[in-house]
Structures are given as C-alpha cells and as structure tokens.
Length: 193
Image 1 (cartoon, one colour):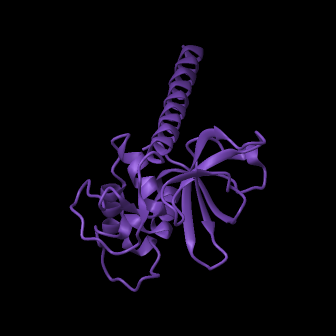
Image 2 (cartoon, rainbow, N blue to C red; image 1 turned 45 degrees about the vertical axis):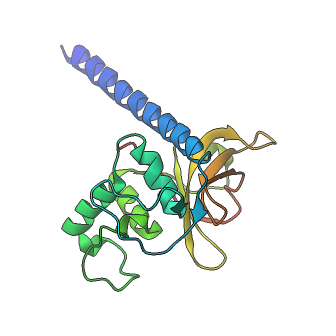
C-alpha cells in the first residue's frame, strides 16, 4: 500500500509539472503572437476598467506584454495583483508613495509584478547561463538609467542558436529581441497561474 501511494503521488506530481510546462509554452506562444500587433510605447496613466481591464490595444509598456500574454491564457494579473496587494499592501514596494491600491496602475508596475511572482510563482536563479532561461519564464532587468524592465522568454532562438529570444516592449512596440543579457537581470520567475 505504501508503494502504491508513493507511485500515485509521483504520478500526480509529474502531471502537475507537465501541466505547468504546457502553460509556460502557451505563454511563450501568446507572447510571440503579441509581437504581430502594432503597439506604440505609451507609459501614461490610463483609467481602465476592473477586472480584466486594459489600456488601449495600440498602446502599452513592458508590463502590458506580460499582462496581455497571461490574459490570452485567461489569467488576469490586474485582478490577481490587486487582490493580493489589497490584502498584503505592506509586502509590495512603496516607491510611488501610495497609501492604497490602484487597479489602474498597480499591475502595470514592474516591481509589483516582481513581488507578485515572488509570492505566487517560482523564483528561479539568476545566472549568465542562457540554458537557465527557458520559454515561458519571466525576466526582470534594471536598465542603465535605473528604471526596471520586464519581458517573457519565448520559444524562438537567437541567430546564433545560443539563447531564447525575449518578447518585450522597451520603447519600439512589442518585439522579439535577442536581449536577455543586454541589461542587469534582477528577477527570474516562472508563474503558471
């Protein structure tokens, strides 16, 4: 009986890992699909509906790539981040001087997404080894300007075949680029919802 239960637990664990991998590959596909849309970089504050709200489809920043890719999988980060921030505001960065949540912008801030993924996803190691960054992973960077940035590792390789590309928006719209190690990596996550 003991061996049967252990075998059953192993099957359940294996199925769970397999399901997570499928979600991450779907996230990668969704992030690739987003690069087909014509989006202008626009970091203005937008008043957007809640839940499942979005800035205008032709506008966006790096976090909107993450939000839209997860929405393609029916995972609403606007609602998830808001609910957790409302219950645990003290666990989120206080960079903006706010005293309460704001459903229009909280999920569109890189440090808030990093805090959420740290709490509910898997924090992965930060390295200079491209093999550690697999499709569906979320990577956050600190730019030389001091600003933060975020993108999704996708299932397409760099021209030299050594790295996966990144789906992100750093100013020229939603693009696929070979930029994994172009900036200082400050976060590496896996989140399957």
